[in-house]
Length: 333
Figure 1 (tube, one colour):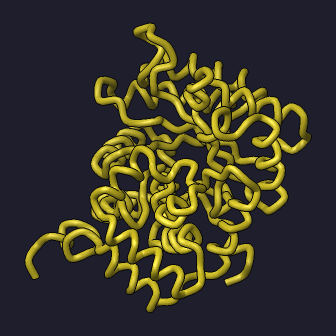
Figure 2 (cartoon, rainbow, N blue to C red):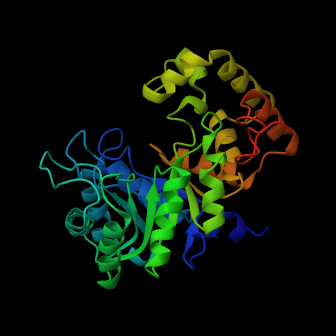
């Protein structure tokens, strides 16, 4: 495999090329201030990362839209817009007003216009629904997206946080309208959270939809949480989703960190290497706070795990049922 093949991939069945490591920006504005965020963006592009992922609600601890504004100021100060595949999201409430959230035609169009202003750009490369809206029909959602694509404000449409059946239903609705449909699906997937292997990833593969993974370290759980806790250096690892999972399986996480030490690789590097190599995965979205985090991720990409090492990880974090896609994962053998 060439370096280009290892570092880049097509976005599903589309002709768009994206880096296999993407820069996630959920930490921008809170854990990462604006000067540091701009350094991360510069470093990511210098290393060949072209996929920048954000959402209109990011930066909510300061105000919703703050992260898009930070990225917009960075784009405005650099002449590199054509080097970036810019992805953002729509659907979660921006205010308490009844029409300022969800996937109505009205909100999608208005939210896109607002994101374009904050991002200081004329187009969004990948416009993703943040999560399915069961109160809105697929035809209304696609009508909004078709309008934005026709106007040149959006290039491709993606989904995120969908179930396999929702991805299929949405794509079939797009097919009936003779529209390209979903270019990508962004999902939570890592060693601890393997349920996308049952139906979501197989559905994405069947439809030629790229899979973008968020939280490959499970909010820091797989980045050496126990060692960091002992050293007092943990910033995020013992909070939220990570804390809940750690309380449920402390012995497994301890064994995982011991395994990583035995093969002389950091826990974060091992978790990223496992995820990026999984069947159907197009790109992994990083949530770095330092440029070193980006450089560490490239080691995970460039140094794949051996078959033996992957087998050992399967023993520590077994796949659901018999493993593999549904229904074979649970029917009796």
